[in-house]
Amino acid sequence: MRAILPLLLLALAAPASALSVDELIERNIEARGGAKALHAIQSVKMTGAMNFSGGDFSIDLGFSSLAERDAKVRTEASLQGLTQVSAYDGKDAWRIDPFQGRRDPERLSGEDTKGMQLQADLDGPLLDWKAKGHSVTYLGTEDVDGTKAHKLKISLKNGDTQFRFLDPDYFLEILVIDQVRRRGVESETETELGNYEKVAGVYFPFAMESGPKGGRRGQKITLTAVEANVDIDDALFAFPVPKS
Image 1 (spheres, rainbow, N blue to C red):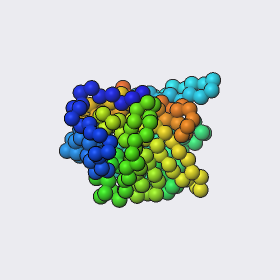
Image 2 (cartoon, one colour):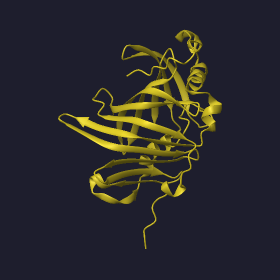
Image 3 (cartoon, helix red, strand yellow):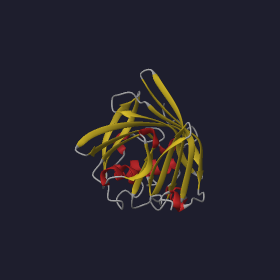
Image 4 (cartoon, rainbow, N blue to C red):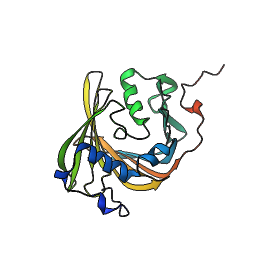
């Protein structure tokens, strides 16, 4: 599933040897729509479907995500009247997981909050990366499903590491690898991105497939709609107040 975007100008392309880290990031930002368009987006609402599969099972769920520029995010996955919620309000992260028998909201640990903080960054880690406290290294090109993609290593401020692979023609992300350490255990997750569409001047991937590195990508998210600059009730991000 390559991220193919015929409308992008081929002038963005350049030989791998001629590009520095700053130039690659600049081309990625321009390919996505440009810094001005990215900064103009204050909130995003996504809706679609999520599929989990593995072995002899396959489960389809409804999926939605809300995010605001001031580091707030909420995702929901619904099945048969049950809704799993994960949210971050810029300070605290919490979850409701009825699929695990937990119907009451629970606050997440500091380690688990790291992933929510990264999700809450509307622009992604590459835009304004120096100001965000990240460091980026260019590791040359690497084969991604037959494509010699540019490989960037991002050492995130929170201590995690991320690798982003950029299409050599269009400079959009086609693969992201997250290396994280939680409670002393290291893990790597691959996410393949594709089916980019333009919303409010910015290109968003409408298809994402994830799984452990080298393993089956058993989680698939297919978006049907992305809306920018929508009004969102901030209470949706905050830890629920118990009803009296």
